[in-house]
Image (cartoon, rainbow, N blue to C red; front, top):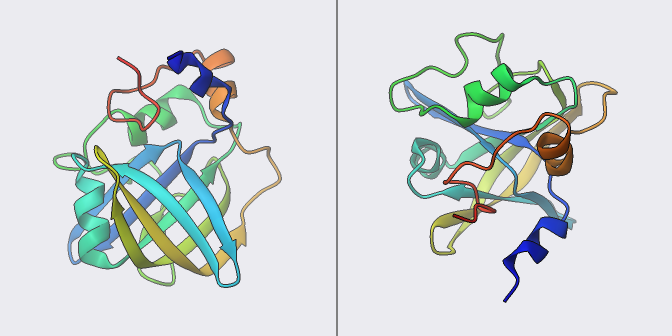
Length: 167
């Protein structure tokens, strides 16, 4: 089987975040998809080993921001290559709270979606969290960053916890 065929699938870059009590977490993902229009629902794939997965499950909600092409590697690395276990990913960037109380960073984001968790599916290394969108806002006009742009223009690498990682 030629697993490089998966490189031809279109992906974007997103920050998914949640807060439960004093615990807040975020991670950079490449798998977020609108799954229905009525009711509006989004699914996100989050590695089971990420602190963010536990916080989403405990909070019962999550926020997704669509990263735009103005984002640079320090921003992407802040959310994608560190753990929320011992690092506050929102410390370096201005953040806001969604209607459901989840933190998000409007900088380098073209849209934000506030989601109430309605289902969780165990898909092996990841959980597929399905959320009903209870709030959505366009944050800017910059183009959303695709995974292809991340690899070809920014020369970014796929981390081992990404759903598209191939060792």
